[in-house]
Amino acid sequence: MKNISYIKILFCLTAFWLAAASPAVAQRDRKKRPADAELNDLKRREAESLFTEGMKYFILEDYTKALGSFQRVSEMTPDEPMVYYKMAEVYSRSSNQDDLGKAAAYIERALKLDKKNKYFYLLAADIYTAQNSFSKAEQVLEALMKELKDTEEYLYQLAAIYQYDRKPEEALRTYNRAESLLGINETSSLQKQKILLEQGKINEAIAEGQKLLAAYPDEERYVIGFAQALAQKGQQKNAVAALEKFLAAHPEAGSSKVLLASFYREAGREKEARDLLKQVMRDPSVDIQAKIIVIETYAAQIAQGYAANQPDADLAAFALGLLEDLLESNSDDPNVYVAGGDLHLSLRQKAEAERQFLAAIQRGTTLFEAWQNLLSLESESEKFDSLVFHSEQGLEIFPNQALLYYFNGYGHLRLRSYRAAAAALVQAKKLSASNPAFLHEINGMLGEAYNGTKEYPKSNAAFEEALAYKPNDDLILNNYSYYLALRKENLEKAERMAAQVARDHPTNSSYLDTYAWVLFAREKYKEARKVMERALQLPGVSFTHYEHYGDILFRLDDVEGAVKQWEKARSLTSQHELIDKKIANRRLY
Image (cartoon, rainbow, N blue to C red; front, side, top):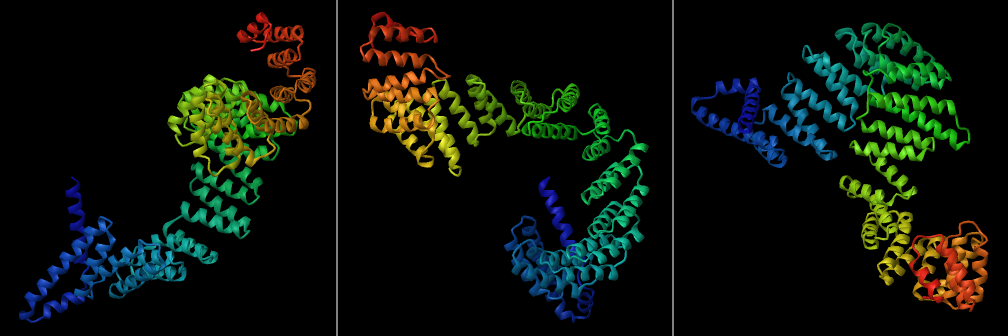
């Protein structure tokens, strides 16, 4: 079938060329002597064959070969306008200004030979417009309508070019001319409104809009476009009036209700807006995306209220009611749940937001922000198994998203699956070369992961790379110094880093615990005890603090005190096998 279609196309185009042959040339052929007739026919058949070949290459978009064939035809039949038209068409496919200049030269030659082919004029107008030669484009379209009857439809194209050429009065005149010949229609009326509004002729623009609405009183998109155009020019009052008038005659027009509700809200007419929006949410004819935008708009407003420490309980209740109505009628649409997640996030209801984003993902959303929000919430709530599972699901859809590898690596790290964590974080790092702040965070986690796999040189290198970007990062300094202390490696450096963090955060029990442990590794037991005793007076104390304190006391020969601290540690954790050994044998392991 494809070959048949191609042959048909080629046949028609070749026939078009033959039909377009110059009458003058044909007349000359008839007057030629019989001795020349055979030679002339042979030449014509060869030209026809070359033209057909050129058309074949043109259809195949091999423009270089097409141009070569057409060029040879033009040499054989220099008075044939169609071949110049085709060469102009080839060159017009380029955005290069030199090629467009050649296109213009060829189409001008075609028009000199044939002033009755509308396609020549139209191509010329397109070429001149591409060259930003708007005056020439205007002239050629005017010439088209002068030379050929029934071409008034191109008045719209002419008017548009006048607009590009910043000639609003000529554009208005041309649209009016089109309207007088072809009647009121959307193109001319909307463009006239646009021009009049830009000129500040508000009354004329309103009259133009009303004229279109009078001609098409049931066309909702016309009143919506009219109202939006007015609002953009600060004419909300007139926009509201137009919508109210339309809704009085068309109470079922849901999209108009959505727009009118937004204008009511801007004007502080919240009750009227809410009445309309309640109707909209229950109206199946209203586009679901318009309803979702309403929910997202309220979510943004609620978030602003919380940011300003001015939460609005009534507004929140109304927005949640709209969401409930929307979910009731669109329970399978993932985008509704995304909007629900955003709304609950704005209300700082993270557990419910997480549930909504999960529902969106289960229903097949491909919106990356939904995946990002779900993983972020699971990370905050320390649901590391779910974090790993959903990040892996997300990577099947978004295989090149560094953030998904990051969350996957973080989940594995917290689950102590260090090799899997390192593999994911390396991928995140490869995809984040242009984001140094994100690389810094990834390197900090890689330092932990490589420490877990006992690839200590890689761990140190990752921590050093992180600190090269942000030398005073407290968390990196703390973790790096702690791991060095555990390995009893480069303890002087570890002590400097831990001391800096403890000095900068004297009320952070975790940082003080690290500093005490580094001092312990350096066998500075008395100093370690002082630091640890400070830590134990602060919030956030865990079993690790008591275990470490017991170890310090043991090294200071206070075995009884050490056992008491180990017993406190044992009561605070379920992982106490090593602590049990310490208590039972009254010794340090």
